[in-house]
Image 1 (cartoon, helix red, strand yellow):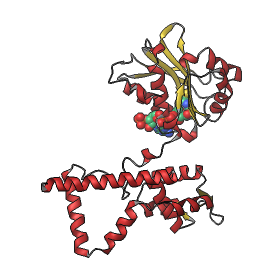
Image 2 (tube, protein in one colour):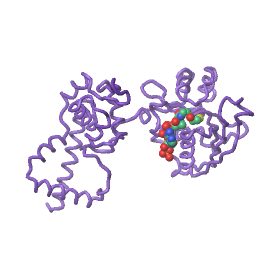
Image 3 (tube, protein in one colour):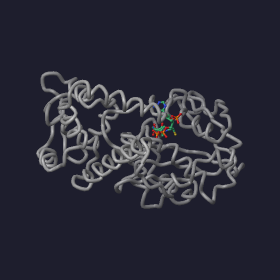
Image 4 (cartoon, protein in one colour):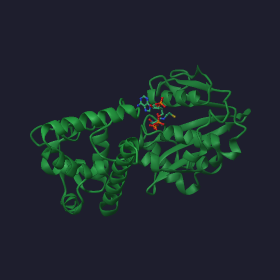
Amino acid sequence: MTRQDEVLVALRRIIRATDQNSKRLGRDTGLTVPQIVLMRAIATNPGSTAGFLTGQVSLSQATVSTILDRLEERGLVTRQRNPRDKRVVNVALTDAGRALLEQAPAPLQESFRARFEMLPGNQRELIVQALDTVATMMGAGNLDAAPILTLGNIPEQLPSPASLATLRPPTADDGPALHALVRACPPLDENSRYCNLLQCTHFADTAVVAEHDGRLVGAITGYRLPARPDTLFVWQVATHPDARGHGLGKRMLAHLLARESLQDIKHLETTVTAGNAPSAALFDAFARSHDCGVTRTPLFDRERHLGNSQDSEWLLHIGPLSRSEGAMPPIAVCR
Ligand SMILES: CC(C)(COP(=O)(O)OP(=O)(O)OC[C@H]1O[C@@H](n2cnc3c(N)ncnc32)[C@H](O)[C@@H]1OP(=O)(O)O)[C@@H](O)C(=O)NCCC(=O)NCCS
């Protein structure tokens, strides 16, 4: 075996050991390596803040917060406001969290750390330099990575309700849940329950709901403009606050446009208020993915049409939509 092959074999062994350890942890505890690493840090520092834990595990604040959300959902950690200073939130393991951690195998990196510490200083230095050179030679010198041995992108290992949601046309049975979802998503207008039922039945072809764990986490309602049937008018888009910022809005729009029955849609229209930045960003992103521009024109005026009860609505026109393969998001991601 050549020297190069020896290096490649060693690298492959490291990758396989990392993979096997992650799988074993997942099988035995249902947890990912980053989750276990964070739980171990909480066990060592009970009652500490999320900010402190971020420093302990060398992950970003957003990633730690996502991991804590998942652990809290599973009843393994608690986040409690500090009675002396309400701005501070303290994190601790629950009894169930402690019990699970006790029976969990240690992550691979912990035994590595212990053995590494036992090496003489010059040998440690050589290992750091050699591995750094190998990483650079493999074009990975500038990749952002946390000191946690697991394969894949850490936030991607923590599926959000948005990424797990199943997308489908609504039925009449979704009417009450759609009503509740819209109510949870201000500034959306609450329509009557009867109106929601019509959206879910007569307009099911041009509507989509996103369901996760038996609850609606997102929905789009819409219809073809009667005078211009090749234009889809998006009536409302709602992503539940728990599922925002994970691409669900974009997934739902892509899902609708990928439907067999909507292949003749050439334009999309909707209305937005001037201050609704998330909505504007969603439709801008949609226009970019379909290689076309967005025009904005005033449509319903606050004083003249809306009785001063809500902000003026601007008409967004997006189109003509490019339906080329490159422009459409792959249907496989639109479950
Ligand atoms: C608007 C709304 C549907 C967006 O849903 P979402 O699932 O979080 O959106 P996505 O994650 O798919 O993000 C779509 C784009 O908007 C951007 N975006 C999302 N939230 C944002 C925010 N708060 N501020 C700025 N941009 C935002 C994303 O970065 C993404 O753009 P990118 O592809 O350029 O990165 C959601 O915020 C919502 O339900 N709001 C309340 C109801 C509402 O106002 N609906 C729209 C009017 S009908």
